[in-house]
Length: 303
Image (cartoon, rainbow, N blue to C red):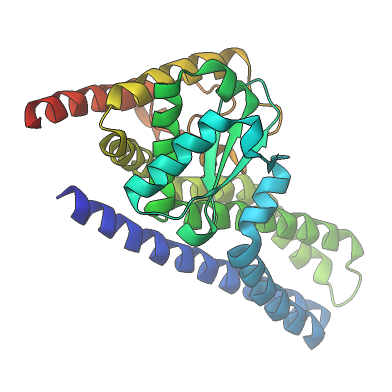
């Protein structure tokens, strides 16, 4: 059953990525059509089509590189973190996945994320604070979790989301600025309305896009990672430590656009109740730990 769920989840992630890219394409072309009509300039529509297609291509092929730059991550050499390299190599063999590239962010707040459009281009990035905080078993749990994101294709939709959400914000800003440049055909009022609507919808769109990256992916990655190491307690302990630390030391090199990528919310967001839970980028740590403790019991029974 777990295998079927993971394969289904993988297919859903691929479909979700193309759906998001399709929505972005339609959105930009529609905006270009309206502005070209107001200004009576077909060139604007042609530019909108070119821009939308180009940005979709860029987001698919280069989103991982852009995310690494956004978080100020740099390549990590084996001599600087031999334990991390050995753990990652062993888990790659166990999972049957290519060895991902390793990157590090110089940040005292402990955290990690995975990126890359497929396992052949997989990347795992950790903060310097994570390497200092966790024991070997806990670090292994975190890397297994991130390896599972790569295997489940979570990284494909997650990184594309970052870039497309950023372009939506750019479009909102351009639409607003167009208001002040509109002088002909009474277009100022319509352009102003478009700009205002986009400005209002941008933060909502960014939130909805983050929600499109289902929180279920974290539970699945937790479960897959625990099965990979056969030691759920390692990841559970790591999550507790990371959650406690990020509340005291939020990450310096993270943003709202990239927050959903990390294993824990990099801003130390506290668990909410009721409808507030719908807007969390991650499931509450308590729920994740509870699920992992339950897995520990199941694994012990099977063994």
